[in-house]
Length: 277
Image: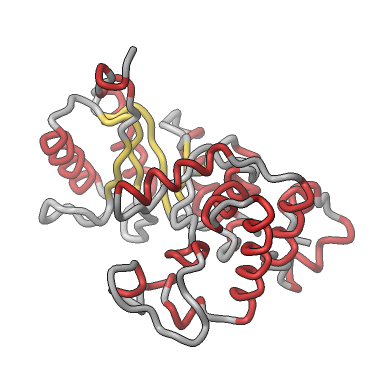
């Protein structure tokens, strides 16, 4: 079938609820999620959403209410699979344990921030995903543009870029990321990119795609040209040597307690795979 003949049946449609409109739909309560799904289906002019993400933990709503609502939406055919975003390890495990105990939908995917400049999920969240069979769809894989090489240590970003328009952009803020470690990572990344004769972004995406549990990557492209360039990274396969170099320079390390405290007598296979030691 030619590209021009491809339609919606060839796509997997995913979207989020929890923070989005319509008015009165903030949170992960039954009322909020039901209104959000109905509004989304109307906007998309579709009968069902393939993967529906809850955008974050809601401390004001009992998790059983959220999960039972998702179960009703699955049973009614309005969503096919459930997923979550921006969770801690204990939150993800509680969701999975509660869902199994009450025979409710277990999440198929998690959408966390994950890149060469943000590997914090490797302490708890990623091991939980690997243990429970939850796929990862990382957001900000290029760390807000840092891993493309467009920013430097001495000049604050300006213009039509992610940080140029908003240098104080949350966890991706320029002043938070503009560190010695960031620039050590960028130096190694630039060197490996030169060896492969590829853009730095291709190498960063190839590194992430090779990580255990990563099943998809969210590309935050601003233009069609950027999207096409990022998609080219699928053709890059990094040798073990280069993955190891990037692992080493970007490693978050183990906090002294409890992870370092437990290391001498705990199984460290996952940590070794992730290159965090």
